[in-house]
Image 1: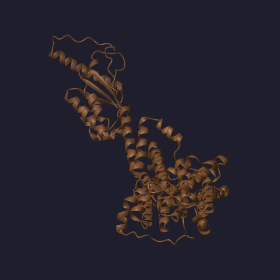
Image 2 (image 1 turned 90 degrees about the vertical axis):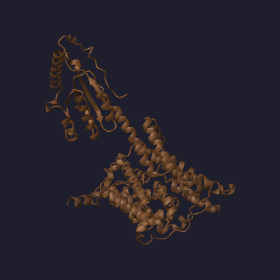
Image 3 (image 1 turned 135 degrees about the vertical axis):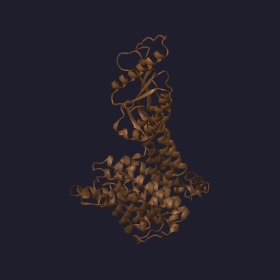
Image 4 (image 1 turned 45 degrees about the vertical axis):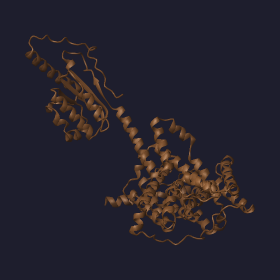
Amino acid sequence: MKALLAVRALLPGRQDYTLLPRTWKGDLVAGVTVGIVALPLALAFGVSSGAGAASGLITAVIAGVIAAVFGGSNIQVSGPTGAMVVVLGPVIAAHGLGALAAVSVLAGVIVVAAGLLKLGRVVTLLPWPVIEGFTVGIAVIIFLQQVPAAFGAKPGPSSNAAISAIQAISTVSPASVLAPVAVVALVALIMVASPRIHPRIPGSLIAIIIATVAAQLLDLPVTRIGALPGSLPAPMMPSLDLATITALAASAGTIAALAAIESLLSARVGASISDTGPYDADRELLGQGLASVASGFFGGMPATGAIARTAVNIRSGGRTRLAAITHALVLLAVVYLATGPVSRIPLAALAGVLMVTATRMVSLKTLRSVIGSTRADTVVFFVTALITVSFDLIEAVEIGIAVAAFFALRALVRSSGVHREEIPGPVREGDEHIAVFRLDGAVFFAAAERVLERVSAIRNVDVVIIRMSQLQILDATGARTITDIVQALERRGITVLIKGIQERHLRLVTQVGVLDSLRHHKHLFTELTPAVEHARSHVARAASARTARNPGKKPQPVQTQATLQAPTLKED
């Protein structure tokens, strides 16, 4: 029953449209605006991935509707994105265009499973420098992928975007470069200038129209998109035999991880800049997975939430899912009514759109914030960005997280410490034979050895009191280390008292054997004062025993508080 209720919570309901009676006009306007903005991007991403402009349009239409209805965000706009192009291009190059539908369905199924397993909140574990480094790396790759089309050449054989761009440039002649470079420059100029005239002007669409008209009137020697289908293709189940699944499993996993990360990041950003309510991360994964599956059935690409289009939707007044659905319907109208004009768009114009889009993905303000934060965050940022550009997107995220985790552990170790404290109150005879240690911060696998070394190194004492009330984090390794400390000191004849074990740590220390290592069950205390009195009684008995063994030896004078000043043992 609980499982059914959990699944039901991930499905669409009337609550998704509670604002619709008040916002439908604004939603329709926002949807048309986003559709106009999305058209050139859908075409460009389709061409850039190797799937073709038609595939980009199909993805924007099918995935846009499905994700809007089933997703977990009221204002998310989904479709083909630059990050997906980066990872999908090598898949198509290696397995052919026929693998597109299969890998889309497989990746979608994985994302759906992640949603049903409630893994949506995992993305919140991604450190900010990793996200920003990943974004910058993707922007660089998208820009480099457009270089061949910008120069009127075919991409080079290398799978690395930078090397492929160099290979492509080396094959062109100066005369053949002029026309496509001029188209790119025109598109870039219009896109950069249009927001300064009015922020809501769809600069990319206007740039595409002007560049296409200019290329037609001047008969420029530039490559065009070519013929597009005048309707949506009939849905077909792709071939998913064992050999296909085996060959595409790794790629599907990479695409699924990327789709989940980008979609959830986009939904989170959208929720932070709008007043349309929070998003459901698990439902968002379910919706994006279903969108990729449906897109694959129609020959489209895997889909993700698109941060730029979602932001346009919010700025244009979109408040419910109707806006994203309207955006998809606008693109559907293009498929049925405007494939003729669209087919004459120069590829160089689309390259220009993506080059400007990639440039806008990199925020100088954000870069300064990351680089100016801490040295560790700066290293994480640059490592993630460099690996993204040089090797693999998912490996970049994994290594970035690993590097961030290393620095986080190092910081946690440094914040942890073993501090020797003075005995509170007036000094009594024999107090110099009592050592009080306070464990601070965390005693876990990375810090445990240093704790062991520092406490075990104590000399010339009869009793050690270990204060654990300030200990925030304790794992099995840390608990075992405390056990080793107690056993090592007891073997040397030093009595160990433990004070202030927190209730949340009690089960662990009991299971690992900390309590069993104590000489007596009465050596466990909840307050420091009784522990000190008990320690003094041990010291008095030890002093009496020493006097009995050495009756002629004079007793040591009582030391003052100043002479008892103990060194504080801290992390360097």
